[in-house]
Length: 170
Image 1 (cartoon, rainbow, N blue to C red):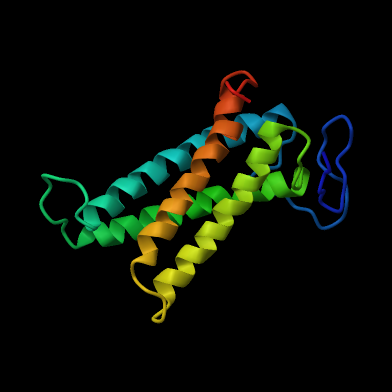
Image 2 (cartoon, rainbow, N blue to C red):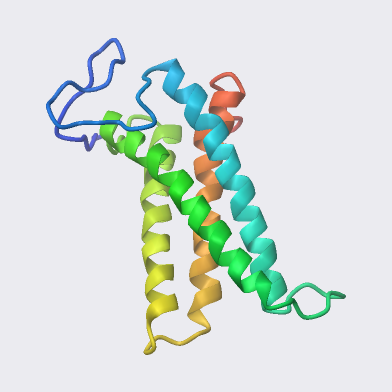
């Protein structure tokens, strides 16, 4: 399979790329240390996505038996979304800076494509929320796409790492 790579290649030993200007910020570790840090962060991101989904379903009245949500649910939904986005940035930056987009195997390709889909869905959601011209019914669709993009990322990244480098079915 072809590989699309970041312009700088990493060392065969697994060290991060060496070039001026790359600062990996809070995720400075490499190799198994980076995976050990990113796996719990990715799992926390997945949990926040599930909370977001529940809050959105509540806001739109899609959970039977619950009364309409108080106004503060909207604010909580936005704050959790901001925290989830900020949590995803160091993970994504580290992945892109160290590995780029790779298609060397099924798991790696699915992880790379899902990462791109996550940020594409996030950009689409911001556009729908901020636009006066796009129909409001698009918001649940792009929000659902955002949650759906996080699922494969957790399965092929965090769960794979926490499960001893094994993802059943891949």
